[in-house]
Image (cartoon, rainbow, N blue to C red; front, top):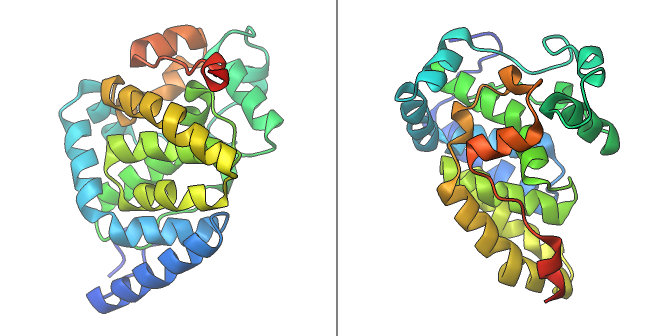
Length: 230
């Protein structure tokens, strides 16, 4: 039975096979976003329930669950964001997309989550991922992706995030691995612990706010690049 548009019904055995296959494919090639997406869906039920619970306990989280906003080039007026002041969250967001040549339309639709509410939570998580990159001031390269995945893993408990965060360093140089372990991980662990749960932020209502104010509201302290030289 289809629970929502695009839903694919799978048995426990089928989910298990998908979990193993997608995990292997994701480890072999972290840029296989389709396999990363499948892995997240078939292994993330308990984490999604945890995320849903946290959203239900927060007034803004509940509003998001009720209105179910989507983030793509149809729902977000990118041209308007380009007209905003340089220090606003919205202007910084479109410049981030331009700089790294990415688009919010690339997020895979959820298919294998067997609950409509949890499916939306997973979709929302995917669509706010780029906001986390921007607010944490992390590029979309491997090191930046690992840092963001650790932030998301610690806040959401999604197994897929932990898998990506743990497997990613294999592709780093020895210097980058040392930098990650000694500098970046202590910072992102502290930040994830102290920051407001990002799923309870109605990012679309913050576009005209100064990005500094959004970070301050979320209690995000930026990493100081000068620490890399110490």
